[in-house]
Image (cartoon, rainbow, N blue to C red; front, side, top):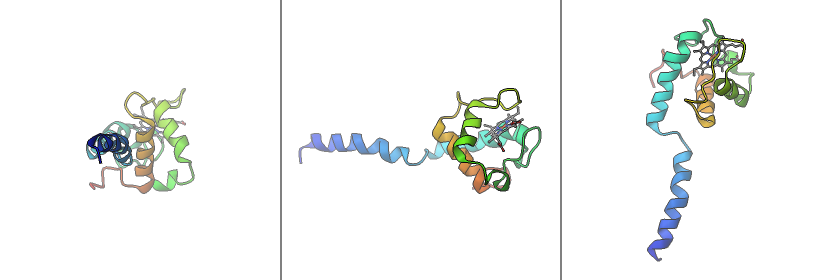
Length: 110
Ligand code: HEC
C-alpha cells in the first residue's frame, strides 16, 4: 500500500482514538481542580459546604448534561461560578461521571 494511504489513515484515526478518553495528565489536572477549587465550596470530600453535596447519592437522579451545563455556565444569582474557560463540555461530563462514581473526592487516590 502506498505510504500516502497510511498517512491518511493515521490522520483520521489518531484524533478519534485520542478523543475516546481524556489524556491521563488532563485527568489528573481535573481531579486536582475538583479537590481544590470545587472542594473549597462543595467540601473537601464533596459532601457539601457553601455549595450542595456532589456525592453519588445526591447526583444520581440528575442528568449528566444538566450538571455539566451547571459546571460550564455556573448558576447566575448563586455563588456557583462558570468554569467554561477552564473545562470543555467533554471534561465537564467527565467530572460529573467522576462525582457520580464517588471517585473524585479527597478520600480516594486512584
Ligand atoms: C464559590 C463557591 C463554589 C465553587 C468554587 C464551586 N461551586 Fe458548584 N455550586 C455552588 C453553589 C452555591 C451551588 C448551588 C447553586 C444553586 O443554588 O442552585 C453549586 C452547584 C453546583 C452543581 C449543581 C449541583 C446540583 O445538585 O444540582 C454542580 C454539579 C457543581 N456546583 C459543581 C461544581 C464543580 C465541578 C466545581 C469546580 C469546577 C464547582 N462546583 C465550584 C458553589 C460553588
